Image (cartoon, rainbow, N blue to C red; front, side, top):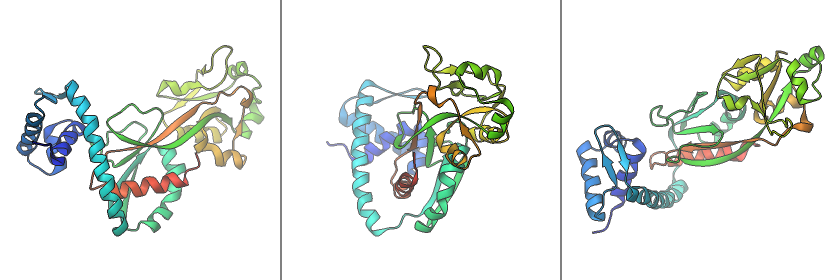
Length: 295
């Protein structure tokens, strides 16, 4: 007896949701119905895919292998259906997008008037979190993540990358002078991040090392706060180009130590769960923002 696509969908949803109960809610099925579908699938395959305990679900070795194949099949079917649906339907419904406040302010918000004009039937909900959010817990459809992705259970689309540079305001440099070498930074006020600590490793050649671990005079949890501090002559900062391009162009910030700068780029990705109810508007947003970002 061959496996059905409904059984594949149940299996993948259980893994993505983390529990049979959460999967049943997401699929709008009963818990017993989802449990029976899993049992039926394992019986057809004559192998255990998931080890069940009272606290968690864990994939067997065969389950890991089957999960990858199941995702491929479901994605192919989803794309085939959506390619037809997009020809006859306009994406609609609620779309929740989350990004750290700097990216939301500089890269998403400026384009949303045009997005709403193009897709008037999509109701946007934009949220900003400085930490990595759980898409299911926060009911987020798309999250923009800056840095190397850790969660392999999510679908992801690269939006490009952004170079980190050392910047300061003309007012600060007029008062403190412009550092002409890495060593000179020790005499300056440096603005860093409260977390994560790796953002306080600046991409500057320091002898044999390709990064400089700074001791900040002042820290903030948000890159946008650090940008505002730099604009207010509070010190020198290391920020991504997507936040500072307009400031540099208009003379509000100055790039410094470019001759010893290491080409350190932060990957920027959109991550999301693939589902039939969301694919149309998720795809619309990803295509739209991907065309407009200059990263």
